[in-house]
Image (cartoon, rainbow, N blue to C red; front, side, top):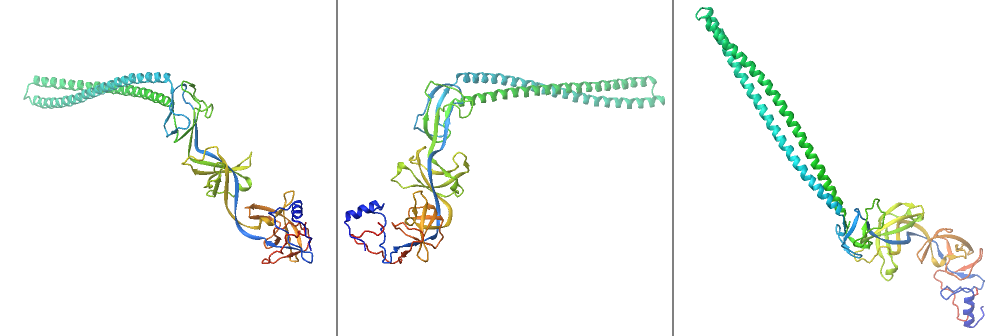
Length: 454
């Protein structure tokens, strides 16, 4: 039976042995010398894996605004913290040389349009010439028909007169007169036929002049169109002189002053930006997930976000929106992104927090109460397994998820085995113990009694 000692000495000996008031008290040894213990069984339960990783808040969209035109800053319309709409003016750059160039192009367009009108007038004149030549040709063709009709009449008259002269009904001189009239009509027909050829030639010349006039008009129109495109190009360059917001957002940075000389950025992303516009009414949370958990993350997995700035508030809930699908070779992590509404502006880009992702894979795992798992000085976890003969064997185990109440046991024991529950005594392989029934309370310990293990 344990000796009775003063309470102060008992407390001192408990502290010296590494015991604390929060640790369980060792059961009194039985009369046989066996230490009474309670055991718990290794249970196989369905668990949902989680991973907790650092998280960083990023703006949903962030644009660095640089100058596309070179010149002096004429006016600044916004400053840091201003809320802007898409297309709102941020600054205006003075580019007088572009304005002068635009005036020159406008004058050139006016001259080219006048030339275009002249070419159109020449075309109209050429078309009129074609119509006139064609009319002359048709007139000549009509004259030919009349000449041929007159010649046919003269031929008929000649044949009739010749018949009468053969019959001696008319004098031969009459036939000579009719022959002359016939020859005159034949000559007239040949003359009219020649005039048709001349009219055809005039039509061809008029048509060639019309084709040339049409070509001149097309050239004038093309020159006018080129000048108009140059004017549009000048308008585009002048539009670049006004820096505009690309989307709804907030001005988070301004690095330009009125009157300052800015130059066109020849390469994307070079030089300091004039403004930075960030869209923060909805933010992206970036979470780097280690290689061991990356394969288990899927779109739609629930995410719980906590931030030191809002430690007293409930976590922000969200779901995995997208994931990169590849590991960063420098960190061996995969980027996971969560979109969160931020209408109140509470989440500020750059803010740091923690994200707990509920991995979508449910597994059957062996678990033990946290109090039944011990850890050595080297950090290695172990348990005291109690066999059917109530002998202890020390088993090294590999642990997994730990929620504070239950620890996942990956290896070292199997489901159904019994291990010693919370106990202050250190056991060795082969040590005999007395397993208490589940419904049996531990042996009472009087205030003056000292535990046998001390």
